[in-house]
Structures are given as structure tokens and as C-alpha cells.
Image 1 (spheres, helix red, strand yellow):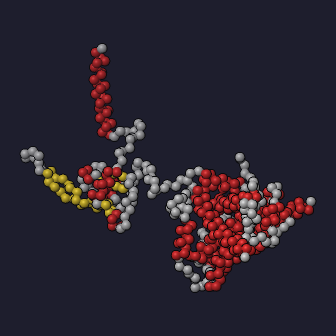
Image 2 (tube, chains in turn red, yellow):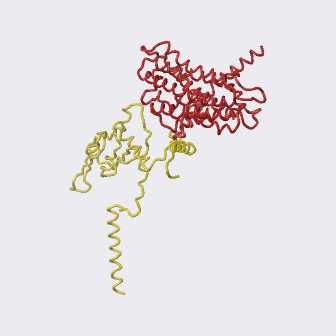
Image 3 (cartoon, chains in turn red, orange):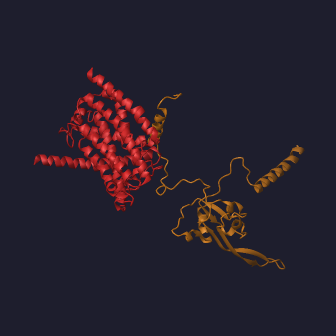
Length: 322
Length: 184
């Protein structure tokens, strides 16, 4: 009974985090992006600096009609938003936040293969956009879907290589284990891996500057062209949940997770702070950089990130063996 | 700082956005804060009805034909015995249709009697297009919001009449001083 209660409680906490953290990141994007562009962003909704803007957006999305185009592959089209969203929820289950006031680690389920599990889940998430692109029966969506596929192929490799480098250094695939093995000097030796992982993660999420598949100016949001209402909202939520998962993974793998003063009690606060900081970087990159052309996207992956990731793996191997 | 290196543009992008983030935004919070408009803003055209002679210059110069004027003549009896009766135009109608006005200011510049003025008031949106036609009573009320004329630039011409008056004053003063100098 106690075990069951424990499991249910953990699931509920993860679900709560899944429903609130992406909204927090979304609100941060609204406000930070606005101020980076010398605007103020939402100000009216909720009264105080537009804190309820995303709630209002959600209510708006719920009211909209759910349309399936006649030319669409109905099943695939309707399933795609769920395929995009649910994997991030699953991935969040396996990401540790660190000690909670002297209690055990705050985590949905500590898996021995945590890293493998989370990376696999993240890749499935991208399939949702791919399904949307190919199932919409729309030329823009189709081109967008092709670009998603190309991007997925290109960036999965450097991402996994960078993650493998950390796993090698820590000698374990468990995310809790990796964060516990983390040493401050990893910041230096794993720095190329960190950069590769972060950039590849951005591309995986199709976040600007790697949003060539969406490219609202040329492809009219690509795979999302035909989506509206709640389905579109699910895609949006998936994007922000993806940011949270990427930030959390970067934190756990490269930034020491809950490492910091009084981490026995406040470890989870450190984790959340680092996640927010990495999410801010994601937003900052979106505001500061223009979209990469499709060939540039692939050139960056194969000519820069993959070699750097391979070099990082080699370096880590030498360090571990030596 | 001179010279370029790899990644300079990337850093500049981050620097620009960071600077914006840490400085106050330029947004004008209009409905909450009234805008600080320059004194010569073209908000709405006000009509000083007494100055208008119904000469129709404004209506004819208006490029978008948004001014409608109607007037009738009234006879003013001669003030002296045997004198000639004078006639005067009295304004019956003066409408400006702000749904087609393009705020070019030609009517105001062409008015020989300063009957038209710019007021900086701009918030007169209407729910119905027809209500954007302001009649002369409404145009008259805008006069209350017309700011006083701007002071002239230092050293500027003060206006022909004033300048010639000042010149004649100076000449008279010089003439008055000249004889006194000769006597002493």
C-alpha cells in the first residue's frame, strides 16, 4: 500500500511539474523575448504584468473548433499532437531533481538506463511533428515534415555522442549516478560536449535558430500549418515541455544536477535554478539569432557538431583510461 | 576590440539582446499613460468660427474633398446716412469628414484668416463611420484644446507687420536723436 501511494504521489508530482514548468518557461519567453526586443510583452491579462497570458491563451485554444482537413490522413493527423507531447511527460519521469530536504532523490523513477530512456523518449517526441507533417495533406506541411526528418537524422547523432561522453566519464547510464559522479572540472573537459548537446537539443526541438521545418515566413509553420485549437496547443505545450526536458537533461548531465551549497536539503532548488537558467539560454538564442537555412542546418550538424562530439568522446576516453 | 574573429557576430547578437533586456523598453503605455505629444501634432482640426469668411479656399484646396461648407449672405445696413450697405457671409454649415481627411494640413495653411487650427487631440474614434463627420459645433469645441502658438526661433523674422513697425519706430527715434546731436 505504501509503495503504491508513493508511486502515485511521484506520478502526480511529475504531472504537476509537466503542467506548470512549461507554462513558466512560456511566460518567461513572452516577457524575456519582449524585453530583449525593447518591448514589454503581455501586460493586461491577469492584471500584473500579464501573468495570466498563457491561461488566457489556453482558454482561447479550448474554444476553437477542431478541424481535420479532408486531404489529411485522419488517424495520423489526429494522433500526432499526442505523440509529440506524451514522450516529454515520460522523459520527465526519469529526470532527477536532487535531494528534497534530506529525503531521497526527487525523481519519478530512478532507472539504471535513465539516460538511454530519456534520449529515446525525446526522439519519439520529434516523430509527432513528422507525423503532423506527412499526415496533414498539405504541401507546406509535407516540406516541413521532410525538413523535420532531415534535422532528426542529422542532430540525433551528435546529441547521443555528447551524452555518451558524459556517461563514459561517469561510468553509468543512470541519471542519478551521472549527477553524483559529476566533478566541477567536468565543466572544462566536457565543455565541447555541453555545447554540442545544447545546440543539438535546440535543433531537435526545432527551436529558433533551427526552426527551418516550421519557418513561419516561408512554410507557414510547416507541419503545424493545418493544426488549430487544442491540437495546436498540444504542439505548443510539447515545444515548451521539450525545452524543460532539454534544460533538465543539460543540467543533470553537464552542470552537476543538484550540486551546490547545502545540496542535501536544497538540491532540488539548485536543479530548478539551473533548469531555468538553461531555459533562458534557449530563449536568448531564439531572440539573438536568425533562422539557419536548410543546408546550413545540416552542414552545421555534419561538419561541426559530429566531429566535435567525436573529439569529445575521444578526449573522455583518454581521460577515463588514463 | 578591433578586428574580427570567429563567432564575433554570435556574441554581438547576444550583446544587443542583453542590452535591450537590461534597459527600459521603449514601449509607450498608451491607454494607461497619456502620450507626450510634440506641440505641433496633427490630431484634429479645430474651427474658430468667427474668423471664417466662408471663402471656400480650404474646401477647394482639400485633396480628399472632406470639407463641406454652406453659407448665406446677410446685409449689414450702412452705418452712416447715404452710405453703402455691406454684405457679409454667414456660415451655415462647416463639416469635416475625418473618415477621408488625410491630415495634410493644406486647409490650415491656406486659410487666410486663421480660422482653422491643429489640436493635438487624437482620441475621437467612433463606432459608426458617419459619426466621424464633425459639424461646426463639434469643430468649435476642439478650439479649447488648441495649444498657444510656439515661440519663434531666436533671430527669426517676427512677422512682416511687426518688423516694419519696429523699423519705423527705430527710424523715428534716430531722427529725434539726430537734431539733438547737431545742437550740442
